[in-house]
Image 1 (spheres, rainbow, N blue to C red):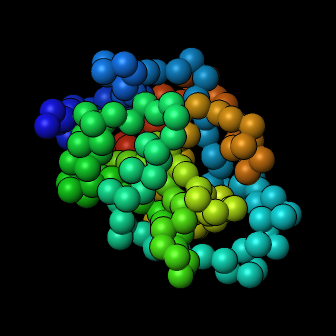
Image 2 (tube, rainbow, N blue to C red):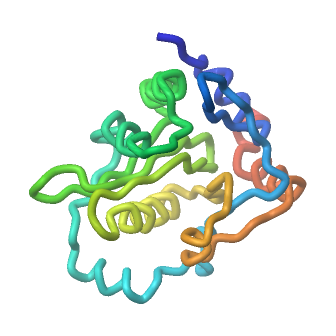
Length: 190
């Protein structure tokens, strides 16, 4: 099975570029406006989700079912996750760069998200839900983990109305490159 080598993907992320598949082709993107989720006090948990979180509807796990999360994210009518993207991100997971946040209940995996961590930057790739709030709970858990890890950049690539509800905002490509440089400077200088 064909895959994009991990060093190519990491190099692309370090340049602010990421891949997506469409109709059997891999395209590389560098949006003019980049979606960011704040990791400081601007991160907002909607009121209804705060109520749901108090009930602890899911057991949250990290990196225990990366492949299942990837497949859950791809399981939709239109997806940019083809076999090449799938194998490529499984490769990043094997190399320690790919991460998943999973929401489990007695019936199994109900939602989650996956992305790539390089230095103090996390690049969110995709999320999915089989039950109400599962991907949202995963996002809140991700933000808590990233804060604990000293991560300073949570890149969502594109901004959506859904992500704006959590305090998400857009920055220009120039501002993004500066944020990215700050998040990975230790890697580039060492």
